[in-house]
Length: 419
Image 1 (cartoon, rainbow, N blue to C red):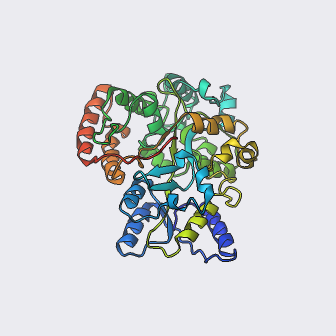
Image 2 (image 1 turned 60 degrees about the vertical axis):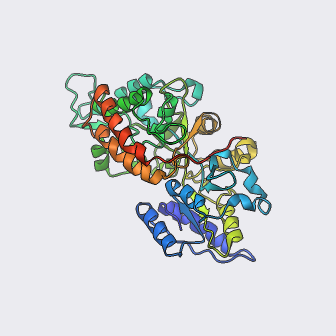
Image 3 (image 1 turned 45 degrees about the horizontal axis):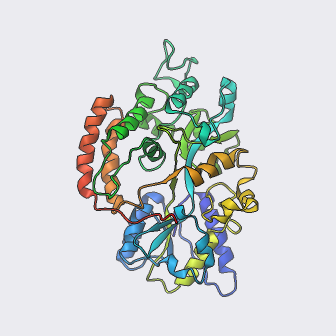
């Protein structure tokens, strides 16, 4: 059972059919479920003791299921499947000292942009090396130069019409667990304290980041509000192609749709808010349930899905590999990232930050993170919708958010281990 686009459906189905046709393998029956209903469905199936053998599982509930004894531990299968030892630490999340869930793939945050827009404005492309990453002020300056109303006026020019913006410089990163989280950590801040017992969105360093994102929308006027963004009714690829926006801080998975859209696009490193530019590693988990009668074959199928040589979703730009060898062996690295759809600077813009300048999304580390984020995210809406403006008001608002979220925090899991 899995979620995803029609492209992902085709990729999963292709590997499933291949696996099913190999000698000694059981047939794999696939079921595509909408992401918006996935968590409800998986919880319903678990309650009825009818869960699938193997399934995508949202990061926010996978650790709870593992700690609750409902998931097979892939680490128990390392003797049979030695390729599990090749996985990057970023792809393995420990619910205790002996048990762990594994990613479905690797995804990271980058700057995606329409190269024609930058060329037409005579602007240098977003930096492709971490050491050259834009400061926050530099990002804002470029976004202002790329924001135009219907008369071609920029936000700093007289008569700029906020009701008639035809091209925004960027999309504001407002979801707190991915691109925004990288900026937060880069400024020395976090959403929660180290032991997962207190929400710390009201720290001075965190307030600085929240305020800066709000100012992108309501002061600098270089990014659409969440309400405006909803009215665009299109994914990132179409927004860049149609020039509704010039760039965005967003995930690697967009490459698949960007490649299909048929316009020139580029990729750069995340900007730095503090001293270091960081990207954020994210992905849901793929889990085998303990009640399956076919645990070994389910793990084998997982490894076939995770193999860039057998699953088309890697070369198509949806997933990044989880195996260390696909980053350290030049031939294997070229096999998935030197393609017609990957920009020429891809390795330095995407691979190098993953290996050397990355942080983990917090969903795997924080216990009961589904509940915690269901309280945190709505509390931030007032900032993103412009109802709370200015640093002092945002600081006061975030103190209230922290006080409301903290009672739901119950600690942390061991999470990623770096040997």
